[in-house]
Image 1 (spheres, rainbow, N blue to C red):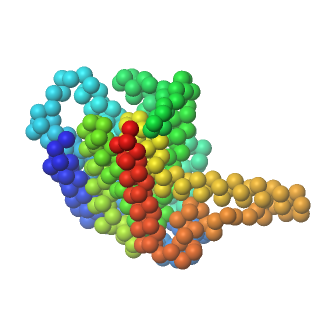
Image 2 (cartoon, rainbow, N blue to C red):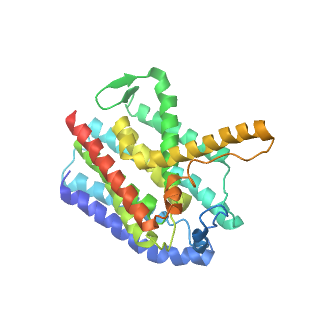
Image 3 (cartoon, rainbow, N blue to C red):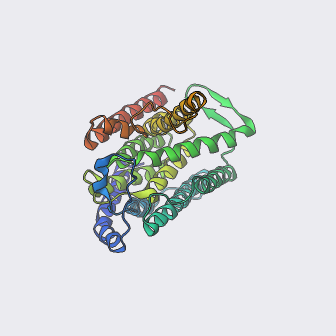
Length: 349
């Protein structure tokens, strides 16, 4: 992939996302599509009440448009042989990744729309979202299977384990966890967008090293789009991506990762996401266990203990005195180190 095509795709996506913000934010304000802040959240988040949501449309539109432009440049300027069967299959898999991400975003949009209309912080129920997400994850794996990706091995970098038919339900669980982990990372101004820029840059390099050029264009378009969105989302945020955006990024992250089939490296590249979700699992589990023990001793309900001051873990750091800016920088640098480590492991294979 010529570097100028990659850079052109990223710059176009960045510019489009930034420009869309000029139009989108006033429109969202006019519709009164603002964020409702939870009572149990950090008290200083109350001043974010009413900040427009659904800003994720900035990078959703910009990433898709710039990918199309980048692909046309790649196809016609580099004279790609589109009659080659494998080239066609790769392009179709990337198209499937886009459709999957957009449909994932549709779940988030429904959630955001309900919140905006009812002026509450709860949209779709957990069961509804889980059902839709599991169906979409299974559908993406089925499309990949139909397009020739029929391996049932889990790649752990230096070894591969064959899970047979159990591979598919296992991957649905992994995809569900990772996509929701991205969603949970969206809780501090600029955090999810910045971490996603880092992870998508790492996936761009990984895809390029694997000669998955069409996929690298999608990941770099996502990175550029998120950078354009950050113009409006860095602290103090003028707009939030909402579940519309975070679900799109979650879907895109797992779709791109699944297409590379580098399972361990995907976890390393997205380790910030993984730890964010894990902190919630640990917090909830520990609270329930200790609450049950307390109830047996005293008969009082709801008296469990917490490990973190608040979860996901970025709120723990926030309530420990970290500024939003410091959290974004720290988490992104950690993500950068993990991405570099993942690429280093791949290069050593």
